[in-house]
Image (cartoon, rainbow, N blue to C red; front, top):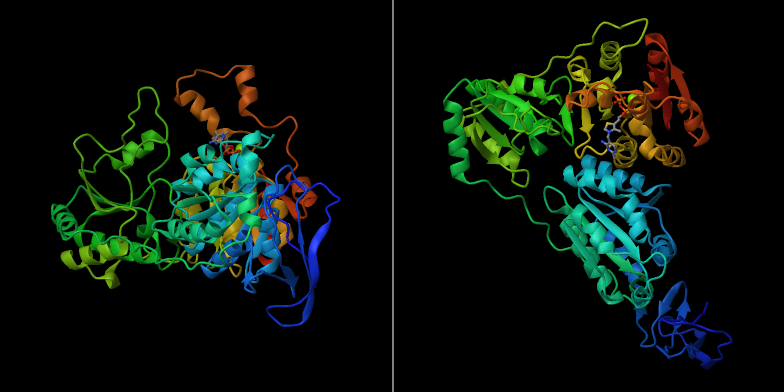
Length: 579
Ligand SMILES: Cc1ncc(C[n+]2csc(CCOP(=O)(O)OP(=O)(O)O)c2C)c(N)n1
Ligand SMILES: [Mg+2]
């Protein structure tokens, strides 16, 4: 019922309390014990009088107070951020304690920070609303960097909270001291270190606004320990989120003029342009004008399947991409960027559009893409009702030995309605698109930053964002090992995720790349860098060891059975597909 709160101290007991006695509680008027402590430190930093009563610290002026951490958590919840992916340490303990006190925040522990940041990416992609992270100083942030990079490229909004030493402690260069701002800057749109407990909530509100600013941004808020435990301001309301910019009438009319030039025009889509409404509008425009439609090579979330306007992506291999784009004379960008190769290769161009191709922009990713497409549809007289949509179809059920085409046919038969497919299939999945196009409506998420290990964490975030949907994570065995700890979080949270691992025991893609960059034929040492067998990873054991039930598939029949099981049983399931 009572205690005194000690602040900013190097405490050396015994510390005699003084100024103690029984006083009426300023909030409920019952009599409570009240004490102040002098700090037996080299310098006395602060002495304060107060009581903790009915779970709350009550300040000496009789007002209810709360510390910076609690002020921040209340700000987050008030601002609509109600999931926090965490991997905390000492410097974040007050934040952890505040999570306990505040209703409405779901806290999800991950055992590696790459899972934390990837999960926050997946959460945004499904809801267009940020989750928070909680990371432990520079090294914790460092472990999360690769998936923060992927999230930044996907324009996923994240309130990325990183603990820091107490501000007065930083100068001692203790083991965990690091340049957190320096580490955060390249993967963040906004970085701020809170300087004062009373500012933490306001900084948090700003971080939410920055993260939510279209198309979504990484806002890194660094929280020194003393800003968490000292007296805070109470919750702060998030200011209005900036709206997407309306594209100019010139941009719309220019696009209409380009489309009027007929064959050789392509609309290249990304962002809201590859969601259902954007595709319907773009499909109607293409149908009316004879333009071609295409999506960027990688997309944060494509809404596809029966009844939606289908769209192909620019292929990854440069020769195929050049071939797909060879007849494009006029390219109109709709949320997309002008297409370039994933890597530079000797004797291959970086720019994928043919020489002389005129590139114009209807809307950038930040703009109101849907509004722009609506106006363009009006300008060219296109009607959404006339957009040609994908018919439902199920490929013939394959049998016998597995290969990528048969796997695609199986998936085309089995993707459930409203499934969320997280695709990190790498080489196994290159041809999955056509045979899955006629499946019931579903979402398809891809790696936007090229840093592998994004898939299983993004599946965690997507499952938390959409608990009623089936999450199907299609993962290369090499990729899966980067963030394998995600399996444990799936088990702990009981997430509806079916993780399918393409166990080809190799970094198959790198074998092709070895040749593509002109490195010749791999010798034994090089081969050993491209194979991940010896020993073969036992994915069933890895999964069950982290609490995820699992099975193995070796042919079409067993894969079908395993998928049926994974997709119908509640909670996570892993399938090791031996290729
Ligand atoms: C963080 C990171 N490290 C390394 C790479 C290089 N890399 C690209 S793909 C790949 C292997 C992918 O292997 P797997 O997931 O098994 O797919 P497969 O090639 O066998 O189809 C590697 C190591 C990368 N993209 N990102
Ligand atoms: Mg592999």
